[in-house]
Image (cartoon, rainbow, N blue to C red; front, side):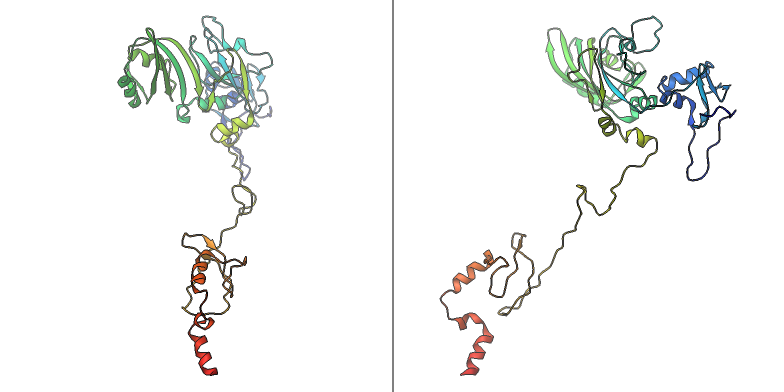
Length: 357
């Protein structure tokens, strides 16, 4: 970025126009923090733009502008990456905890870049936690508008009826908080406890526990098993596993490049089919009916049988192009076997015989 400019640059004009972006979004996409944290940093006076302190997050910048956090320029942006992490119980999902409790980020491998979480899990909740180095991707995936389902296994003390679980499909209101449609299934009863599978799309704070309390249940164990298309599977507790770029681009709606404005690829030849092979529209030939008793050489044509399937064209000798009789021809020719040729030749053949006499 250029340090000579003292104010954010206006948008460039012409075909190569580059749209400005919010400062907080630029900081988040550099992997320093989430977009929300970046807005707090701006309010705290930790961010400078072109050498001047920024006092409001409502500022847009261009790639030519200089953005600094705590006097240091932003690192060069890397490609968006995504990891699965099996969070154990007893860890908070925060870079800074007021009570100085152990954090999941303290347990990351040393070779892992700085990452942020996509959403959060309570300290006693375990299971799948997605991590990324891209704040923009984190913001995209954690929004309810993305529509990704969060699925949990729940062990709770108490009893619940199937009717009560079925009623959750319409959502519910708890302590003034409206929760959207919830899918809940009773897996089994074990002593004084029940095991449930709960799926929701919003991910509000303590949503699963609040729902269970509304049903008269006390949660003893909570495990997130999936987040959208990504599954916990057999990932060991405390382990981190990176998701390949191919899977990331396939599963994330539109991919990160599409979100930045890149157009989807199109086939180079519009005449190619979905399989990449030349596409040819099948030709359909309609065969007109012939007058009864008319003989002579017939032009090769493609007809259709009674079942709608194509049959080979007839030759002048009544044979198909392959030299075999078609099923529709064989019966009448067998019936005509043994009759005089004049009888089979039709009306015109008999008239010529009379003239010769």
